[in-house]
Length: 283
Ligand code: G3H
Ligand code: ZN
Image (cartoon, rainbow, N blue to C red; front, side, top):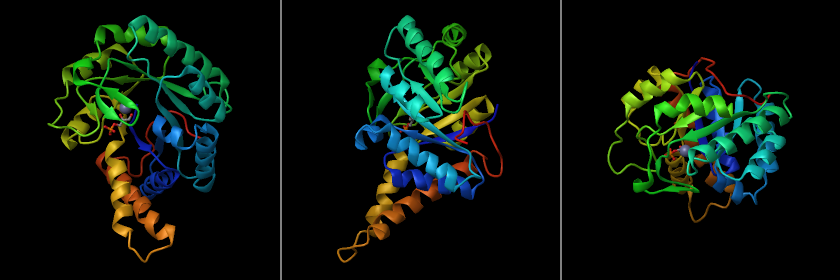
């Protein structure tokens, strides 16, 4: 199983930058809609899905996966599946083990059978354990953090039928106050328990050598969000001048900054020129 990077976007302009960056490196890309982005566009999953479809048509050489990130509302997730998202995350990590299984299985059963792309046209990510930190609509205090228990992984994956598992091994959402201490021992134990794709959340600020080690140990998807928001906004700020009235000259540098950051990420993860594992792409 190979690696693919996944990036959050807050605006449609960033989506374009993400695809442009991936295209420059001949890499697939997972576009992750945070719940905040969905809210920002008046909860229109159709708007986001159709933008991603448009990008897939405009850039047919780039495998594009559209992911709904950290979703908790089962009806909203089902709507995303029907709209054409190719990967959905059911985040029931705050629930009990049994309730997490119940909700994750309900979504896996639905998504595998109701995608407009056919049977198994939409894959499902669930989370076991809980990351600390704050990112968009996700808020967990340090005291609420829970590492993924490897002894529960096999049962969880078997009973839910999910395709990917987000694990809590020491990363956190948002900016780190101190360098994260990744529990590679847990990752090793988890990897032995299941063959499904493992997902590392909280990618912003993780040292490069830790990323490399996670990938070498079998992590298949790496999520990066918070840092990209700043990269986009800094790019826009750099272009703001009192006399500038062309929005493209203000927003465009933000999109270019995002594209450049994605290129750098593709280099870091050695995605360049490869076709790594993609959960499901829009065809
Ligand atoms: O689901 C999104 C990711 O976990 C992003 O984490 O904002 O800390 O980079 P981050
Ligand atoms: Zn996350």
